[in-house]
Length: 345
Image (tube, rainbow, N blue to C red; front, side):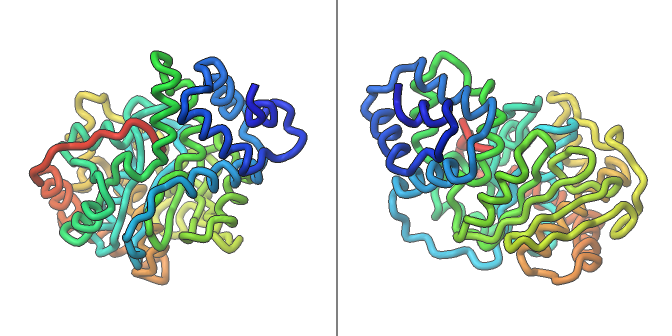
């Protein structure tokens, strides 16, 4: 049994970076068998280890990434959630379109569904929006449209190796771990990242990871309903990169009425037209308020606006003017072969 798996099971001391290096080496040369890889995934999924073990895991993967010539994307924000919690339509994906239509440079990372019926990649496929496959392509898409949906190239190749090693077993049973750690696995030279954290994710551990991440400023958002989105009818908390915390209460920035019945996910067969109706502001006032609140967080995190009321206002204008809906339609009409994600969050 490899020391990485032993360390996770015993939980006596943190699993060090050298141990993780050895794990990736053996995974790469094929000396780890399927049972051992499945056991490690099961351990990580049943209970995430301490912050230090996860930090060493992330760092051991980061050092294996090929060097890129990409410069920092100043003023660009990534939006991604941990999944889990009450079921809703793809709020963060809609918020990304609205924020981009309001003038923010937005990169959205995501995956196919692990814990929901329709992940962001599943929705984008139905919309006809292609994912980017390189940093250069992402930069070009940002320059042209102000928004890009990054494909699996942003994630460590070791995740693909794991999926191949455990095949034909599915990675879906390990979605809790992949969704929780996924926001820290994507490598993008953004200025800021806004990550919704559901009640099923280990907030304290993720806050430690956010504080020890130096490549970008990370906001983690939670609320008293357990959803991984900012909601107008909930008490929302934003945990800042520097331990700064902001609480947004119902009625503070938008009217506080509404419930999850107003945000329920559409049937997969009608998900694309329903999503476009959300962007057009015709899916109901609660859906519009919710998406605009999420978009406002991206506006403030990117530094486009400093105060929340004006950030909400520009988000609402992006919806009511038709700019957000038009942006989605333009992206769907962009020629090119779609690249579908196989893992991530």
